[in-house]
Image (cartoon, rainbow, N blue to C red; front, top):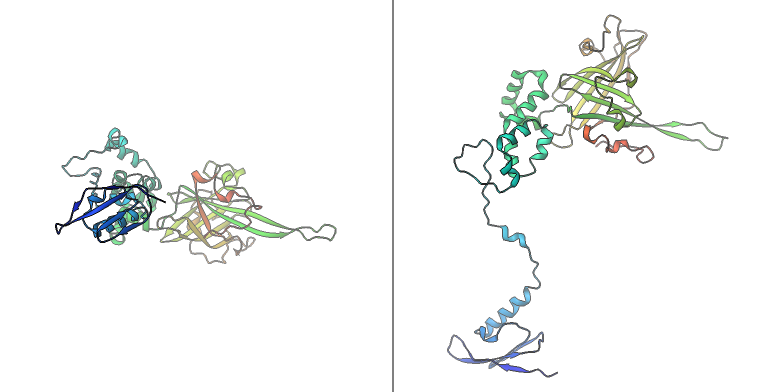
Length: 370
């Protein structure tokens, strides 16, 4: 194969001598370097732009290497300093211009008012939106209101004392670290067991997987609701309130929380009143989640006619100090149940329709709470 060449003007080098450089029109991936003549192929620059042979070699290698290096545009962001957004109610006299349209249209006072109406878990999600919202939500006013509402039974003075002694005066740290029951959803315990069926024609021995649920809903006032049913979460969530009728079989009781220990009791009304006592332990899969409750013990025992009052009476105060096998009605013995003690899983109210606990037994025969 023949190639045509064009002669280029001589190029001076540092020692004052001249060398000839030749430009080859047809591109061939090779170069031939001699003492007096430079033959350079496949280059888009003029050979006279380089001074020495070493410079030509370096330029050729640099041009070939740029096709092997991955382009990373985010590396251009290193070293660029971004001015932080001034948080809400800042004492800084410097004015900051926020380019976001929502921040220019929404005053800080109105943004603060919106966040004050939101729940703590909604504030946690909103803090991930932008830097300004994160700084605004760090305001201790939001977390103080949430903490005083969550532990309102302890009283304001006791909560302030715990705040200073254990959580360094940080309401947000207290909200994340101190155990508390969640009131924005249901705690659900899914239990399954195998029941033997009736053999047909002595050929097969059928078995049935029975699934039932225990539901708990707590309130900040120290009361809770309990329901034992085979209905799914999406069906039970509609009746888990104090306006539920007797047909819904929703019972109310009282509870107390000490650290991560829960003591709860409720009264089953009837001809032979029966008290149901719970011993629970609160925990969470992540910090501040409090989304698991372990059922340590479940005891049913009888109460006397004088002790059994209405559903609004403090039944927890009646059974306080009772032994595990103690009963005050000989017709109703004390029974400690060792089945159906699967841990409770928290399901928020807005996720009751889509929870995996709604799956039938055919698709999920056993559920591991974690």
